[in-house]
Every structure is written in C-alpha cells, then in structure tokens.
Amino acid sequence: MQTTTLIPPAGQPSMPMHLARALRAVVGREIGRFLRQPSRLGSALVRPLLWFVVFAAGFHNVFGVAIIPPYETYIEYKVYMVPGLLGMVALFNGMQSSLSMVYDREMGVMRLLLTAPLARGWLLAFKLLAGTCLSVLQMVVFLAIAWVFGVDVPLLYLPGLLVAMACGATLLAALGLMLSVYVKQLENFAGTMNFVIFPMFFISPALYPLWKLEESGAYWLLKLAEFNPFTHAVEAMRFAMVGQFNATAWAVVLVCSVTFFVLALWGYDPQRGWIRQRGS
Image 1 (tube, rainbow, N blue to C red):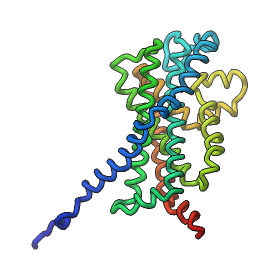
Image 2: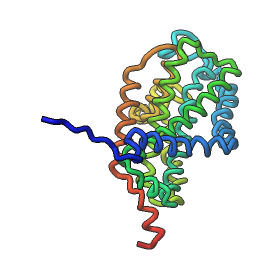
Image 3: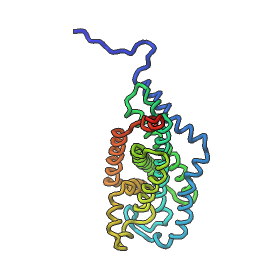
Image 4: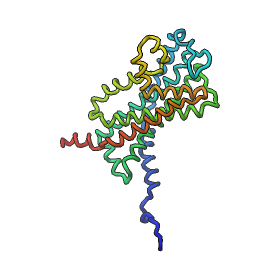
C-alpha cells in the first residue's frame, strides 16, 4: 500500500508559515503601536507609581509590621505593595487591550484579520499573547523603578517572578478578551471598566492583607476576595518574590485563564460592529 504525503502546492505557504505571519502581524502590530506612543508607558506607570510613593509613605506604620505568609519577618509596606501594583499594571493593560479589541471590531479590523486561512482560535490567541507581552513589558519597567526605591528581588527568584508575572498578565488579558465579546458598544466600555477594575483591585490583598477584612468583621468582603481571580494572581507574584510557590494561587490563575479564553473564543463575533455600522 502506497502512502502519500500532503504537500502544499508550489508557492503556497505551509501552516507554520501562516502561523508565523499571523503572529508577526497581530503581536507585532500591538507592540509596534505601543512603542510608537511612549506616552502610553508613562500613563500606564503614573497610577501605580503614585500609589507606590504616596501609600507607602502614608500607611507605612499601619501595615509595615504585618507578618503574614509568605513573609517570615517584618517587611516594609512598600515591599508588600509591589505585587499588588504589578497586578494593577496588568489589570489596566488588560482592560486597555479589551478596549482595543472593541475598537478593532467596530472598525472591522478583526473581520479583515479573520480572512486569513487560520482558525479563529489562533488569531484570538495571538491577540491574547500581544496583550500579555505589553503587560509584562510595563510590569518589568515598574519592577525596575521599584528596585530604585529599595525593593530588591534576589536574582535567584527573578525567573520565577517573571513567570508569575506572565501568568498573571495572561489571566487579566484573557479577562479583557472575554469582556470585549460582551461589550457591544465602544461608548459603554468606560462604565464596564469601572465595574470590573476597581472591585477586582480593592477587594483583593493588593494594598492590605486579607486578615484586615476578617479583623474588621467584613466576612462577605473576605469571601469575595477569596473568589476574586485577581487575588490569586497577586498572591502568586507575592510568593514568587520570596522564592515560594503557592499551589492554590497558581491553580486558580491557570484555570481562570483557560476559562476566560474559551468563553471569549465561544462568543466572539468579529462582524458584530461592522454589521451594525452597515445598518443591517
């Protein structure tokens, strides 16, 4: 029995070539657009830097004496804040990526991208990768600034922290990708961001340990924080900064990332905005 090998016709690129071109087009477009707008990096870092400088000074004596896992000794409040502010950078960039998706859908850009001979999942995965890369880039810059202010991460723990940062950024980029499915109008996106960003950020251990909520009797806020995916992204980075591994946090981050991406893939309609503009 003779076997045959399927070979693409002459002049037609193979599937890996299509993937490489789509990856370069989607990810390269987002990164190139970001690098051409240096003000975006500045605006992305102003908010966490303001929190880092002002809150670290104002609440130093309030939270600076807390000894909680993964810490085994007294730490400065600015050290405690850094993982939460890294999460803030990724959270706001994830929402910014979601806004970009809504805009691309309104303008029909995604409809044109989907004319490529690739499955829709690949293109959405590349958009997710682009958002993750932008978040990690901004987080690394903020981490370098925090190092200048005296927050040191041992080189031995830095690779694990970078992996945790990438996973947290993927989680929040996937959340933004999912939100872009259900935000039908560009004008409604600002309100949606307020209902997502601020509850996720404040109902988490980003700025204060969760035992403070339990101590004050706010048990319902404590439970919300425990079910908040952002909480586990921050905790994964916090443990990684001291060379420890939080299995629960990593499991939640990975499961939620996959869930959000699957929901986005299931519900994304790239022609929704285009059809509405046509009056159909």
